Amino acid sequence: MSVFNDSVLYPCFLLTGFSGLESRYGLISLPIFLVYATSVAGNITILFIIRTEPSLHQPMYYFLSMLAFTDLGLSTTTLPTMFSVFWFHTREISFNGCLVQMYFIHVFSIIESAVLLAMAFDRLVAIRAPLRYAAILTNDVIIGIALAITGRALALVFPASFLLKRLQYRPVNILSYPFCLHQDLIKTTVSSRWVSSIYGLMVVICSMGLDSVLLLLSYILILGTVLSIASRTERVKALNTCISHICAVLTFYTPMIGLSMIHRYGKNASPIVHVLMANVYLLVPPLMNPIVYSVKTKQIRDRILKKFNQQKV
Image (cartoon, rainbow, N blue to C red):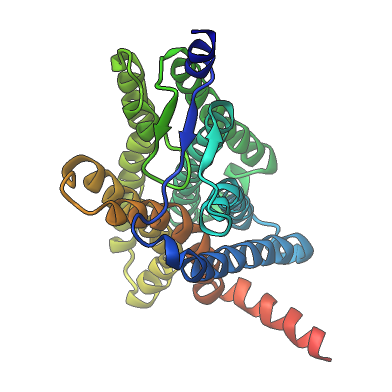
């Protein structure tokens, strides 16, 4: 009896990869590793270029540094369990380990959403009030924004972990993904989950839901300002400064919406589709953001090419 009680107090969770394709995990892990390696290399390059180039010590690039750092955190948080499943066929994870991973995945996701909103605010100020840009976005303001973004994410997700800790689980619980997510952990509980479910919904509404509405409002104001510019050349130039950010927003929100739709309406879909969408949600934004900003942002692209040419010499 005591053994059973211990197993309930300290439940075990089994992560899930691509069911039915276990014999091909070695092959499947190669593109995952390449995506991770490219993400890490790309985001470290962005951070290095901004850190070492004084001309890039501007609000726009400070926010880009925040985005790169967040992408590094998101990639690194998911890496251990993904490689544990695909390389070593080890699915077991402790309850506390699962809670820690879930906490940081959702913290970094909320931070990324808020950083994208801050970058939209940066573009809004640059286009609507270019003469006051430096006066509005001072270093102190940027530090305050960074602290607020981080504090909000840490504070919102912590109660969710605490509520999950108070629920009861089976001795062995099978998860749907090769990492731990809040909505997946809730499904495994055998006790009442409505408080955790409602709180999880409130976290989404107060973070990504609110951010997406403010993002849309920011771009409505930006578009209104751009359309009021008389010169067609200046209108195009102003919009071009937003292209990289728009791509980053789409890269972040599209997989998230797709995963939510699959989770809610795709109950008859193959488990492989669920795992694939979850991997896309967590792996694609950290991969694409440095690529988009390196290609579409001339200042970043020129500095990378300059560093590369210096290395060749």
